[in-house]
Amino acid sequence: MCMALSETKRGVFETQGDIRSVRDDFPDFLCDELDAIWQSIKDLAVDLCPKESGALASSIELESEGGSGRVSSGSSAVQGAEFYSNAIYAGNDSTFNFEGQATSSYALAVHDGHMLKDGSFWEGTPFLEDALDAYEDELNSAVDRALSDLEIGDSNVPSTNKLGDESD
Image (cartoon, rainbow, N blue to C red; front, side):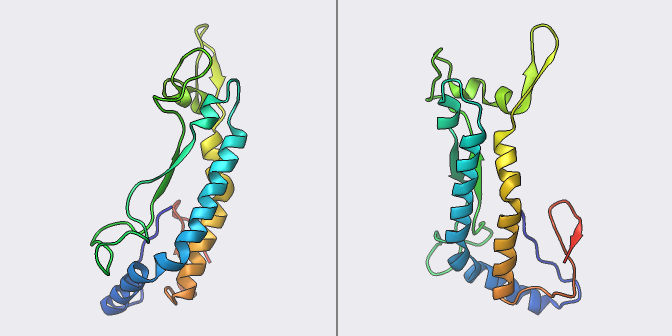
């Protein structure tokens, strides 16, 4: 999920004020909600993950990739840092299945599918992608509510989602 502010129908000073509000206020009341949604995403990914040994499902982790609303330098956020960034992944070099294979060696093939020796394609099970898709509306709604609470944005100006489609 990506959020951007533009100066459409607004001045530079108003946009700068919006950026300060996002930087200073947005993370404080949104991080707990986003953390809960991401935990639900992980839980669903574990449920959707194919399980022979259960090793791949047990390797699913959430990872903060950057800034967080709770981590700042002094009293203000680090310039240019993200206020909240999270990722989900499966497979690592320290979790092994019953055959002694590290989950990192087959996670992508299970998720995305792979070619078999006979030339046919084995359809994967996109458990991470499906879990993210299932909660995309909740993530977007949480951000939209926060922007509304901060009185950022204009209901008369259509916003765009990550695909570039206009929405109200």
